[in-house]
Image (tube, rainbow, N blue to C red; front, side, top):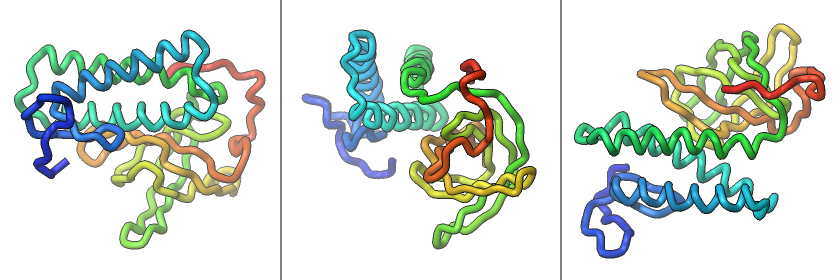
Length: 203
């Protein structure tokens, strides 16, 4: 975030350093807002009040919250130990909450694949491999910077198959290294597995 807008929290005069669901926050109020909303979503999940229509909103919030927490942890030179611990806690809580959104088991599996972007001005192709599979997508690592909702082509040379995928989330892991979650757009069970016989594996 490069603009110098002020934090939207009431009576806060600090400059905003990040955004969360269209709101601009200083670091302290970003952390507070994440905790407040995660606590509310956790209550809804526990009390079974989270409706299907709200899961997409929660998924988007968790993705944005995690991304901003990572960016703050990597870019803020004046973080104290408590702030750093809270940002890490936010990432862990986001991971815990995301467990409730999974629509299929996860399977740790490595398959050589090729990803291709045909986006105007950002055309690229990269050979990589999967880390985790699900019926509806995969976790992979790439060197290219991608954004949420980018549409890519995933090729699986081993089976001579390809499909369109959407970038569901991005997690920077180092210089020119990103872990990304991919979601198939128009295909079911691309990996040709019997998901009823596969247990959930941790990421």
